[in-house]
Amino acid sequence: MPIAVDIDVMLARRKMSVGELADRVGITPANLAVLKNGRAKAVRFATRAALCEVLECQPGDLLRWESDVEVEAAAGG
Image (cartoon, rainbow, N blue to C red; front, side):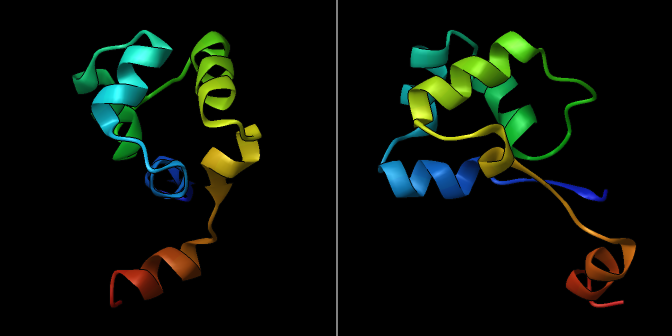
């Protein structure tokens, strides 16, 4: 998928656990895992805003576009 999710990066930078982030954002750890692993089909703006507020970051710090070439190269193709 050409949209990469960098929630893991921000969690590491903030030294925060998935459980703590889920609690502070107000979503379940399971839903956060779906988001974090790039399996979400959609994300509400309110959820994105809450993630940015808690992680003290911009939306672009959480999501980035990768070209198909980059995705294939990362997969070893």
